[in-house]
Length: 84
Image 1 (tube, helix red, strand yellow):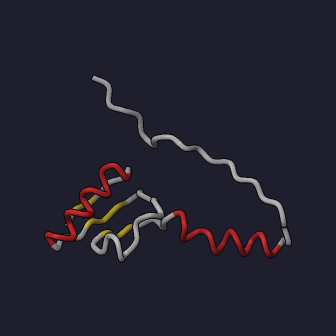
Image 2 (cartoon, one colour):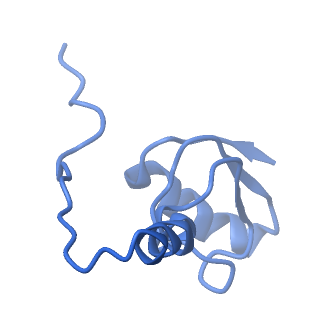
């Protein structure tokens, strides 16, 4: 079993290789919604993916009958580069 990683630049290549070696990978922080059981069957997360929160978001919008919604997001690396 591999334990980690938090960023998808590391999680994805390890998870792809783990499938061929029949090794389990456990990620403690990667929430990328592109990863699913069909694509990466040996990857398990202890946090839900971003897309797993969508049903709750939709239910909240319906509950309050909101028709217009705005989203604020950050599209950048989670961790900065290593500086020597």
